[in-house]
Image (cartoon, rainbow, N blue to C red; front, top):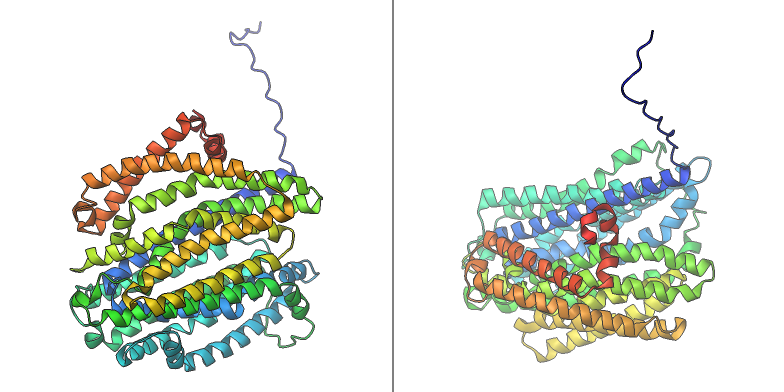
Length: 577
């Protein structure tokens, strides 16, 4: 006789339904976006480490720092001026179209890679041979030793133009075939190489101690290691993409038959975008020329003019302020761009205003807080990137001053960025080009005026202020054009949100200022004592400010905070409370 079980039988679980192809695709996209975002974040963090180490090696507001910065930045700007827009705007549609052919775009990609190598190779040889004239043309009032040093650095740095081109075209080939991750993670390899070479520089030649004439004691070995290491990083950034490219199985080979590639037709369509990039980069070159006058003025000052910010300090302040914009505004705008585009294609123009309003109000939560945090922590942030010399506090203060000035326009930079996406979604590239031209010309005119009326020691501060003011102006212009074409997007509600959020951010800033005062932030105390002291101060003050800020927004039942934390709250239920 069978024994009856004491435990009731468990009901059979329903069969698992496999995810639909659309769900699988969505999960794949989410994973890809997560990997891309993490690559960007890691690269940014390593970039900050690289910048901080470079200041330890050669100083921040020093003549050598400005000379190296000039030589190392020129290749990036020239590449964007000559070819950056072509790779990012013109070639992407062509590559995507070619990837759907029977050969998966092998023939077209072979032609394109060959064309890139030939054209960028010839351009790089020509530019490198003109290193001396380029440095002279893009600087103001530099002495003969400074020009000679800049030329030596440029000889080693200008070959980066070629490898930027290779990186861009291989990256776009990978993107066209859905391999996004490698392109976003390649800059990590670049930063690792540069951190290693700068660390080696410090071990071999020591850290900059302040008070010495770097131009008199500088050696060829230092030039090769510092500038050669910077170029090696860009080489590695390009070369690492060949492995995932090989895995595509396209069987690429040299192909000089470039006729019929369709570049002229696509180039005409993208002419306005390319023009916009050219105008912006030419303005950057001109403004950096004006700022370079600070380097020469610093030469005759006590302590090497450590309190006088130059090109390195200005670029560092921009590197800091662009971080929250890149993480939050760029990410959200990219997501909403698809919704804008879909609304235009489906002729739902009435949906544009609500989408824009939501995007502007949501991004206000992190961007406004970041602006206040930069204002409160300008000193420690500057100290973080000021090295370890005897004049590091003065150099940190110089960077902090520029950070304060550039931060003024940070919220408006993100507002302008959102509004411009609406025009692009409607395939209108002419309007953004016109706005960019007006702003670029105004920047150059104002900077030229500053050079004429201000001493060279104040030019970097003037240009930082000009950048902040023109960010505000660009947002105002975009606002009026948006309202004129699409009607009011609820601007009153957006302004109300920014005011409410701004008050909460200001209150958190007051609390942060008290904590900063206790940590010696206003008395050259612990916050200024070292890079480590600055880092600890930033972490403590920033955490206190963030906590107070979120509590205040929760207390006032801010719907913008709920929208901002929405994606996280769905994964972390405690955030909903």
